[in-house]
Length: 95
Image (cartoon, rainbow, N blue to C red; front, top):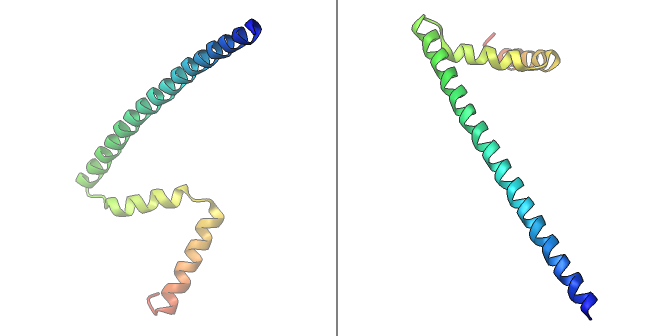
């Protein structure tokens, strides 16, 4: 019977230790995500400032955003989108 009590106590100690480790890991993950969210917000503000500067110099920011979106695309995807756009515009008599 003493052997079983010892095993139960040992199991409880391991569970408490695991919970402590899990709490520490969870806190670490949360803090890392919070720091990254802060960095993301700061970057978003920097991007807004660049767009504002470009707009102040006469550039159309809506078109700039479109160019950035296109540049992110793979070449094949971009070509497919351009072909579809051309086809649709032609079908509507807009080309």
